Image (cartoon, each protein chain N blue to C red):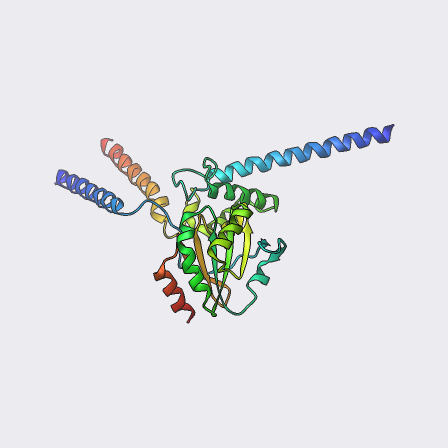
Length: 173
Length: 122
């Protein structure tokens, strides 16, 4: 009786381990921070790309409208892919695009904008990447949708696609 | 001459204490960076990583320490940005009860078994 009980406990334990490891095999081990949590926009001071003056975040997001913050760099290949979509999005009157130029050379960034067009109503310089950290970004490109209550309501990691553009358009309608 | 001596001593004491505090900040910074997970090279800590994300985090931690933030406040700041996973030491909350309490339960269970066996032998 005692032996049977021990065997039962061992079988249960091994089954438990098997299920845990089997489930673990199917779970990707690359962690991605949550993207749908509502967060307040950070308070910061950043250098304006055009004027080279420092500007406060409350001045940047002062209008009662939706904002899209896009982190980009001239050296980033996926940024080139998503750029036409950002141009398309910038035509929408219900939204303002803010660009965060991430760890970039000014002249290269300027050439990028001159060559491909400027979808942004304002570009901020993030020379050391710390502004991106304030937004909770960990790479480039990343895009954040901010609602009228100044909350980050969506975060898109990687280049945006037509599906994401349609989703943004649907939210701001 | 006496005044000069006093000023020299005061200057040396001030410089020494500043050096000490800079050293303490460096120790704290290393401790914090070793406990932050790099989200680009996920097996590594930010301290070991050379990624762009890691270098930005190093700057942020340095800035926060200089602003006078405590270790826990810096972890809290990073948790708000990237979630609990960014810190190597897991917090005690509903998601980690099993992680924290299971070893304790196993220890108690094992202890009880040994105690019972010893009692039975007597």
